[in-house]
Image (tube, rainbow, N blue to C red; front, side, top):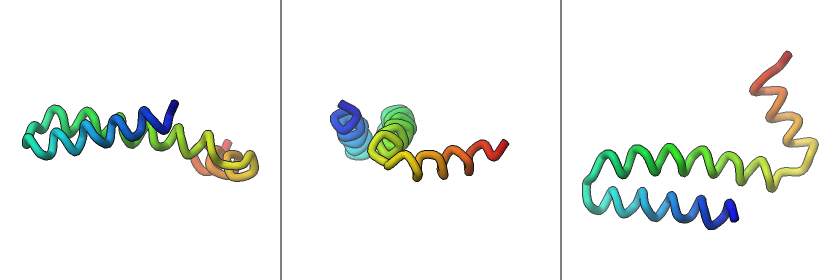
Length: 59
């Protein structure tokens, strides 16, 4: 489902670029990046997830 969400945000961003509508571009590109991060974290093995978590919050 995250794959569909990521591709949907990407397509909306491209549509906004085609129209030149900055609100569409900005909101969907931010959502695209966040959804892409969630998808990447879902697909990574546990060791790599732990390494990313340690980079983000080293405490």
